[in-house]
Structures are given as C-alpha cells and as structure tokens.
Length: 427
Image (cartoon, rainbow, N blue to C red):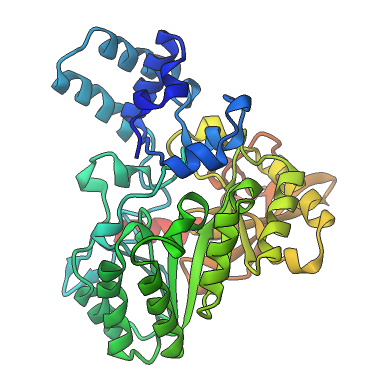
C-alpha cells in the first residue's frame, strides 16, 4: 500500500496541489496498491482518468471552507490534537453511516446490541469480520468510509462468528449471510475460514446463501490466482458449494477497465470454477462512469466472463456526495440508454436503485399524471417485507439526487413508508 506523497506522479505535482490532496486524505481515507497504480490508471489522462478519480482524493471532494481549514493546519504543522479535532468535526458532518445503519440496522442478542452485524431486511444479515475491515485500495465514493478513519464508535466489527451463528439460530427467516467490510478478501484464507466454517458446521436449516462483498476481483485479482493461499481460498469456496449452499461473490466493479486485464479475467474464471456465482454491482458516479456507453461496456465485459450484472446503484448521501452525485433524472436516462445497447443477458442489472432508509428504491421511469411529470418508483427491497414490490409516485425534479429530496405526487402529504419509519425510530 502506498502513502499519497510517496507516489512519484503525486510528488511531481505543485506543492499547493499536493497539500490540498493531503488535506482531503486526512478527512477521507486513502489507500492504493501497485496493481491499481500500474495496471488500471492511465496516467496520461490524469486527473480526468476514471480510475484515478475512483481511488485518489480530489480537492473538490471537501467543502471549500473545510478544505481551507485542514490545508492551513497542515501548512503550519499544527499540533496533532488540533488537526485531529478539525478532521473529526468535518468527518462527523459528512453523514457517516447513512440509511439508519447505526440507529435502525444493528440487531440485538440477549438484549445487547451486536455491533459487528446489521439486519435491515428480513432474509439477509450482514456480518463484519474485524480482520476484514480494510480494503486492497479505497474507493473515493465509498459509503463505508467511516470504517477506515478511526471513528471507533461508528465502526462495525465482530471478533467472533459464534454470535452470528447464535443469532441465525434465533432467526430462521434469514436465508442469506453477507460477509462484508471493508473487504473480507483482504483476510488470509485461514481467518476467512473461521467465519465461514461455523456457518457450514451449524447446518442451519434456513441458511442457503453465503455472500462475500469484495472489490478484490478489480483491485487485487491475484488474491484468487497467485497469492500464497489462493488455492486454499478456492478450496474454501468449493466447500461452501459442496455443502449445498450458493456462494455469491458480490463484486464491486465501477468501470470496464477493471475487467480488461488478463489477471482479472483469470481470477473470475477461477472463482466460477468452484461453482460460486459472481454478481457485479456499483454506484453510478460522476466523473467515473456517468456515461451509458461505459455501463454497456461494463455489463458486456461481465457477461463475457460469466459474471452476472446485478445492480446500478445511486451514489449514497454520505462522504463526498456533492462531488460524485448524479441527479435521478440523468441516472434514469443513462440506465435506459445503456440497457438499450445490450442483449437480454446484460439486462439483469437493476437500477438506478437507492439504498435508502426504507429500503432499495428503484426509479422505473417518468410518467405524466394529471398533466404533470412524475417519477415512478418501486420498492425492490423493504425494511418491512410488505413494502417489497410496491410502486409509488414522486413529483418530477430534475435536480433531485436522493429519495429524501423527492416530494410525493398528487398532493399527498408524505410517502407511504414515512409514518411507519417514524414509529420505528421512536422505539
């Protein structure tokens, strides 16, 4: 992993630009590896290269006043405690852990909150193994950035999987466990085994799917091919499928270049050889992939390798959201244009979808109702299972980029889910 100022291309920049980039990296996490530097970034296109934008801090990611504060403190070599106080204030103002992750998603076991798990949707539990709470390289848009900046009171991490097994025993409605982070595939295979093997040994009747959220196929494909324990990792995948469970790698892939290398193609082939399924998802992010052609190329590349396009997400309302956000109207247009370019095998990607507090809300289209344009929205997944599949309308707003920026259509005072959510939050 490389520090920002040790990278030759960054060291060659003017001093003030370097200082600004370092200021942003103090607030938002920065980490990059040699594979991203050497195989994915086109340095002749920097700063406009999409992978550079995806992995390197940019001055405009922070509010100008906040950027100035941190830059000035770095310039005068301010005391560490003064710098940290300013950084923490800015971080806590960036809406860490959106969509009720801390206030609504943390389950309880024996009356105690389990901080290393989330249970938002009935069928799926998220598990955060402590050793997997970092990544091979950090995405600048990542909504999980609080995991990486030392805000321990906001960090999800579990030391043992025994609590997970016990929780699943008490919740037989759960069919899916998503092992997430960070990136669980930064863990050595022996550590990952200590999370997965208890799930297999428990033979829980309801559990049928184990998912692993990872960016490793894009940022470190050698994890599956030439790392010292790569073969053992593939054997572990084999064991999951031999137990009659589906293993799904939820692969984050933001740009077709991430699948264009020989290493990435080899990694996908090896994963699929175990019977695991690779499902690909990413947010639509300005300056990286806000182009229909890019998404069409991305989906084609995934299908060509045998992976399944799964989701086009809307960038969440956290961190440097103003830098990356794409209005919903434009997101819908990009999604529609991309879908029209590809065959049915590529049209499995759902979107544009917002992972918001009530659930996953997809923008299906624009309708005219009573002479006014409206967004047609649908719940793909809901905090309340009864909400799944429900359609509803919002007033058309070409600037809106998130669910809470929309207003109900037809003069309704609020959306159908808002009152139940208030009741839930008061409990």
